[in-house]
Image (cartoon, rainbow, N blue to C red; front, side, top):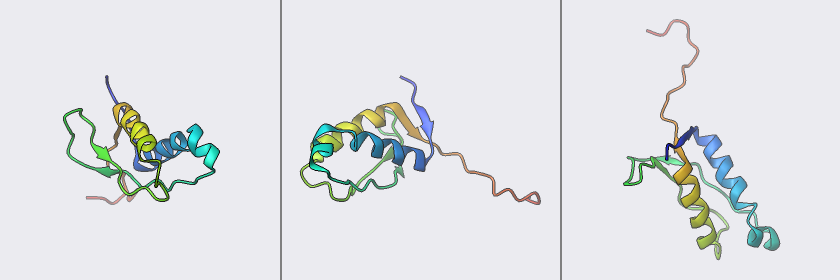
Length: 90
């Protein structure tokens, strides 16, 4: 499967959205802190990012791991560098 590409903020928002939609998290009223994705060398599946150190996530490790597996299979982190907008770049 070809992965779609998102920037770090978009990936963080997508993981956050999916985690906070999970029934067990909604029922417990927990707010999980989702870290920014970190670029890495592509792993054996071809995914080039990972997230670690979720906040307030004790007891939800399995649910978060399931979300991460799904999102990592769908998306890669964009490696494009944005232009600073400086018209005088050399």
